[in-house]
Length: 241
Image (cartoon, rainbow, N blue to C red; front, side):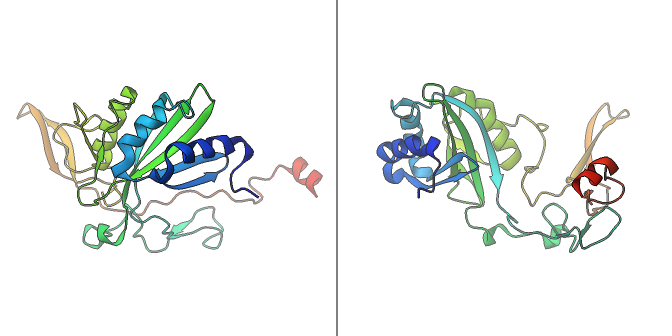
């Protein structure tokens, strides 16, 4: 039995015929097909994804960044922790909640940064997710695909701003979400949730000033809703029993 659904079999065959070994891996989850393409093949593969008649992905819907630092780590206890409807952080050292001295080190994570692209073929009614890993974690660089899909312009700028991924060949790669003097990339997992500086307007100086942040780091505690007497509809519960 094929590992791919029937609706994706045609697309899987087309990707194999056109891209061949440029596709490092291909997987499907809940009907969504994901292709992993190495950075050195990405620009050529992007042109083929758009131009080859079998594929014809003429529209790029979205591009975003991913930081895999801490991926798969779980520090939370939920149902076993308390009966009060809240979970508790076990170590208080999950991504974004650690002390700066004890922050995770990027060297422990292979392929830490990636860009994920969502493509649509209007001609064939196909959707494809493409993941491209940056070869180097210390300075993640990927080729820009703005000459292939010009809709990626602001998406690549946003990803550069929030994750620090440099898109080589982008004509205007500068911050788009944060302030001009912002230091760091706030969506990286080793960036503290409280930030590094606070910004305020100083009336005496007549300008915006930056100061060290004064907020104490704390563990965020998300609410976990459980099935108990507070949330059970008596009529529905009686029917179920």
